[in-house]
Length: 209
Image 1 (spheres, rainbow, N blue to C red):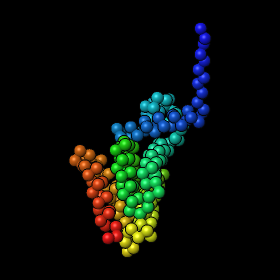
Image 2: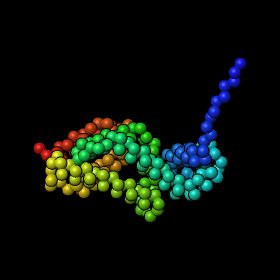
Image 3: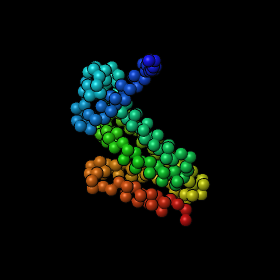
């Protein structure tokens, strides 16, 4: 009888580090949702992820480091969803696609976004690495929307008297306000219906007739 040898590639140190980091990020999100950011500890994060008590501290350095990593991870997921949906679209079409992307992201990764919101709200009012990430994130969102509006104006699809910067601020405020209401009472808030109506508003408000 012949013996079949199966060659299993051993994972590299970098791969093992990435896996442990991901598991601890997931554990951190779970603890933030269960206990809140203030009561979440690195020791519990390491234990919940299945590692030693000290590994999370070694990996992230501090709770702020863990929180920054959670925000970075969640934003990366959002950007992937946005890019896959918007692609090369421009103007109003890009804004409508971004609205769909945001709705899908909330459905696919609600825990990630809830954790992001908790971290953001706690960081408001004092300077910290987390609040700096928040400023960076919001600025990037407004830049994207402003660019789409300006592209729509150049293409003749959006009226040339539209204030692109003001539209960008309003669009982002609408999205964040919707998320806040949905998180407060998800059963009383029809997310899909709201986003379809937002797309209709955008079309009516911006499209050249």
